[in-house]
Image (cartoon, each protein chain N blue to C red):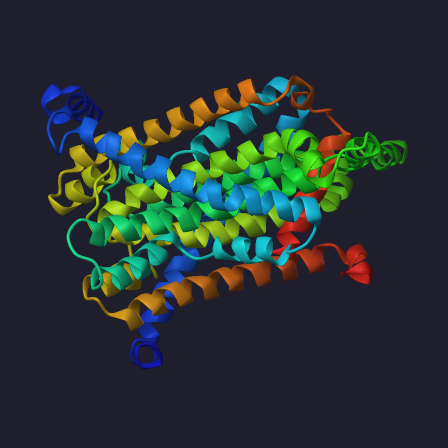
Length: 214
Length: 245
């Protein structure tokens, strides 16, 4: 395996970067969409049913099927990377809407009331009090989504979209163990990098938690 | 294009024969049923015992770490190992079932474990106070109370298996994934999209059936989720479990 990695180092790196885009960009877009959706889901019970229920229904669709169906929705060809980006964004939203709604719901009533008493407007209260306090739970959900995104993106190799999953399909077809293992390990390393980055960002965003970190 | 896909789905000739939709659908359900059953027989008792005794929690962490392995990679590794050791159809079928079982175990294990370990301690104490023995408490109090989480584990395991059974078409087994893989090989997008719609519909229907079953089986007293306290606990538990993984 080491010989294979040494020989194909630059190719592995460039595929790794493309894999990181396909998994990471949907994570970012999905988070930005999930925040208002999670906030809305807290407004009324029927909104929660529609938003959380609807997105978990989409999560039910198997990844290969969703990739294949994308051209019908986005009007692209089957090998376009944008299909993967859109599909992964849908999965990210499906995982995060519930998490964001629960995280915002877990902010204690006393804290919210104190913020109101201090004269915080609803918008300032959301960005200044509720969202920061919800960061640890949202970040836990984001880590789950990141690991699952990295794994699911590799499935797109079956459709010939450029990323690390190529080593899995190509290695299997040529019965080349070193290549398949390279693909598996590269995916795991990328998932680990995502996990560490999210944890670092969380630590920076939640200075009050640093003293009692386990 | 959507019209063509629709016509492909409604064409009766596509549903008949050894490579027809009906046969592929039965194969897909067969792989799914067998794998989830085997995985449940292995994972549910182990998860329940770990939740009851509080010992062997590392096993849950190990199983959760397994989830990071891309299922496509796991499938190819197991298939390559078996292909030189078995002959005929079994050379592809056996590794497929093994991979599906491996993928179904972590969610089932986690569901049974967290279901049993998160039972209200007051209910557990009351059962012991009534003179029940350890196994009786597990069977009559903890397991019924754990049913909602056991079911959510069962549902995510089943969805994972249906999704991966689709991908398994890449190693020459049957199931609905054949339409996607063969359609790709023949540049026949209509067939691919038709297959994808069938896979998505299968997943939605199976999940719906399991949800209905859950509604029938779970005792009414466990269904009403109090809005504040319970949710706060689960949110905290989610944060903790992610930290453990």
